[in-house]
Image (cartoon, rainbow, N blue to C red):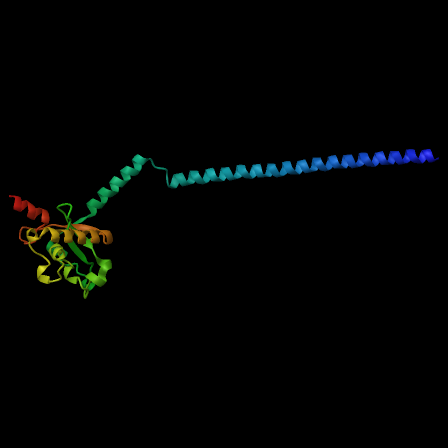
Length: 210
């Protein structure tokens, strides 16, 4: 009888051990399946993300196509030419209309120290200085190179013979020009007639060489 009990216990023990082993194997299989499931989901999500990125890039290229360096250079040159064509030529009489009075823009012409051009600047955003009542309003609507060279606000010295300027005065004028060019837009150039006493530095130097 005792032998039978021991055999029964041994059978039960073996059965329990086998059951636990099978349960452990089953849990391992389930865990592996869960891991594979997560990996599969992440893989699918990655594919979807890549697909969406490719669609977005394709749409972006259609709206803003990628340009070659040659195309960008050509566009810059075309923009430069367009701006050059847009620059307006002013006479002295036309320039005098733009003093800031009655809401007009404020234009001032200054000799370009690096070329023959007399540049017309739009000084409207400096209305407190160059507009009506401002300390430099005397320059508004004028070719102010002579006065700027002499650092003078005397109305009688705004325009004058540029050939009489000293080198230091020409340098002063160049500093004013560079200051204006760094702050105010260039909107045109001044065309001088034969009936005006105001001449450009380049023209004055040419006359002196004759």
